[in-house]
Image (cartoon, rainbow, N blue to C red; front, side, top):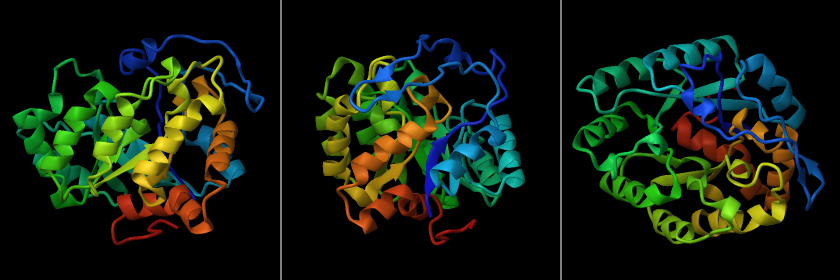
Length: 298
């Protein structure tokens, strides 16, 4: 089974998705190393299951994990309703207010749905230094394990030290690092990101998604060759059994099409064994998000 472990749905309203308005605009470009045509960057419209399902089918992807894009409890209801209506949406990574005194109650309510698999907070947008070290935030994190909910870490590379400290504090909780922690690919910088990633990989309770990679490069002129060192670093530090395939669709569209991203990942995985490839394409996502329930929603 192949699973896209990271994508989004939304009914676009500017006031509900302010981060979309902050994304720099770009125009169509070309991936010079493989003649891949880059994508349509317009995100200010609706993206729903009917838009994604044909892309998954064409790419041979069996299902997906829908990830929150708004920090509201209503986001959970929206995504879980879509999951109920569409069998290919196998799980939802939602949002609860981890800093609230009601975090445990919110987690219980969210986790009661069979397709609830994880929680995420958009830490990358938090201006507070060491945000994840906050007492209230960590109190909320502590309750997730009780409900078998993973925590998706969304940070920029400069927040990785904070992420490492969080992971070290909760060795029994499953963490999933989104978008390989958004290194400065556009600038071609590997450090200090690579050093932080090596440290993070020493904690066995962390896995990483190879999603959102092309969008950290120049949307108009990125190349597979430019992305290769970041992929190789992730592969060496986390190994194939701790890497999850993800697309970050529709944000992916700023840099390339779904088909093109599948082509890039397929090229990266080609040297690996069939067992390792199967792990990255979907088995790892099943193991991480559906503990004890492999292929839960086939």
